[in-house]
Length: 80
Image 1 (cartoon, rainbow, N blue to C red):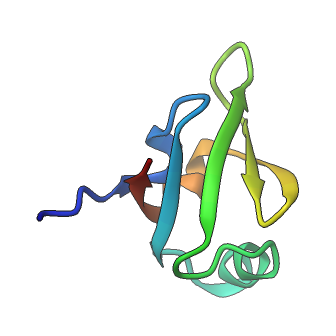
Image 2: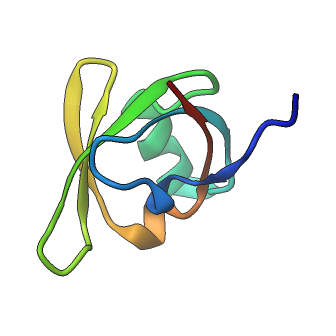
């Protein structure tokens, strides 16, 4: 079964996914890891702002807002 991989920024409100890999480096990578965005972590898009950027995500029991430029660096696979 083929796994569909897409950027976290492509999730719509209510969709869930699991982190496959981080494409970020340097301080942004460290910040994303500190937020719990590690391989296998489950993420749910809770809400997008009226203009679509940023979006609120539930990650390991916390709610964080990420800009699309940052969330586009996170590869995820949709989960049910």
